[in-house]
Each structure stands twice: as structure tokens, then as C-alpha cells.
Length: 312
Image 1 (cartoon, one colour):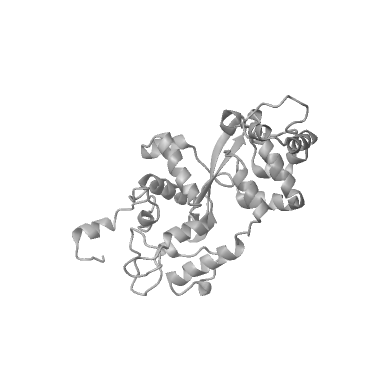
Image 2 (spheres, one colour):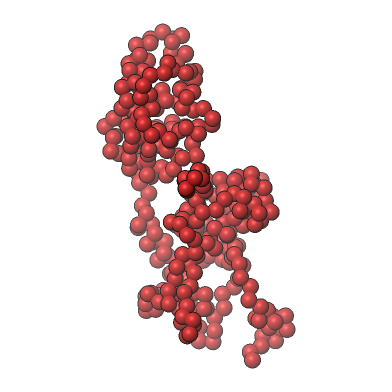
């Protein structure tokens, strides 16, 4: 039996501890406004990362690794604020605010869907490229870019990678980088090559910033793809949007009836005759008093097909 010479360390070798791993860099990467580590966001992110780590499939008879599989049921992780609240002893408000901060950092993205008879079911998408960036922040002392974790990787006498770094069966070992640093660089290159950030047009930026807050707002990149289809109508789209924002029937209940920008564009609500007539009426109002009145939320006289069909 091998021994380190330290009783407690030797005994720990027999204890199998499983759970979430928190890279040390996260305590520097995710901080509150007062400069202290955002502990709530960090522990929730560690749980999300756990579910996105692949589960290993092994042969029952030989123990040989056969492959990997995802842990969650749907196309992305489905968790509720309440489930995180129960798991970590936080309030649902604390969970919501922590996940909002993670989404602002673009390391996760929240999606609200209808599943069966349930609406606003929370799904959480992990963004690996952003996770890699936050896990590889340069050390102030050494300038090192390697991810740091609270578990020091061990190497056996042959200098091979530790068992946790064994690649899946479909990866050739000859393709493995000779160092962790090279491995990180390769992953970063692959992800950035696949997901280049689009260059947004000035007209779209105006549209995106003007679009009201809604829990369905979705991805900016997805909305930009739709906007590009109708970019020749960009001026009209932005004018119509400003009228929509003045209608209390649209903005009531904190925006519960406001669809995602991509949906609003795709269904061509900006092409509706009702709203085009409103544009014409607005242009005909030339007095300062009328222009001031247009800036105040109002309820328009009901007319058919105001928002189109299937708005929400």
C-alpha cells in the first residue's frame, strides 16, 4: 500500500467525495458591487456546470469507458428558482438576482418556455466560451492563464494525465495536447471559430435598445438575423416600435404581453395598416403641444388587427 507519510492524507485517499467543483478564479471573476465575491452566483453556477458536465458510460463487466452522455432530460437544463432555493438555503429572490447577474456576465442564458400546461418554465443554457474565459483569468502574481481549481491535479509516476482527464473513447489519444494550457487554447479556438460574434448594424442597435424589457427578449444575435431580412424597412420598423411602446394594452402588467423581438419582427407587426396609419397621423401633428402629447402613454381607440394574430 502506498503512503504519503501523513495519516490524515492517507485516510482521505479512501474517502470518495463527489460534488461540485469551484475554480478559485471564480472568486475574483464574479464579484458584487462592494468588491466581495458573489457567493450566491458562484455556488449556483457550480451546480449548473455540474449538470452540463458529461456523465461517463462504463461497461459493467470490464469497467471500460464506453462513451459519455448528458445528464439532463431536455435540450438544456430545466431548473426552477425554488429548486435552487431549497438546495442552497437561499430565498427565491436571491436565486433570481444571482442568476440575473450570471446572465449579465453572459455565462448563462435563461429561457422561459411553456411545457404542457405549465407556462414560464425556466430553462438554463450554459455558455462554455464565457465559462472558459471566467475560469482562465490571468493570475495577478504569475501571469498564469491556466484554470485554477480548489483540487490540485495529481500525476502518477509515469507522468500521465490524472484519471479525471481521460478522454472519451471517440477521441484519439494522439490528438491530446501535451499540456493543459494547449488544451485550453485549442478549445478556445474551436469555440470562437464556431461562434463568431456578429457585427450589428446601427439600425438594429437602435431597435434593440428601444425594444422594451420583456422576459421573452431572447438572444440579440437571433433577433439580428430576423432583422436582417427586413433591414430595408428599418426606419419604418423603429417608428412603429415607438408607437407600440406608447400603447398601454401592450406594455401593461410589466410587459407580460410583449413578445420576443424576433417574434415581433417575424410576424410583421410593424407592417400592419393600423400602425402605418398611426405613423401618418403622427407626422401630420406639427404643433409642440401635439408632439409632447405623443410622448405620453395612451390607450388608442380599439381597431381590428392592432397587434396581429398570435402576438404572445
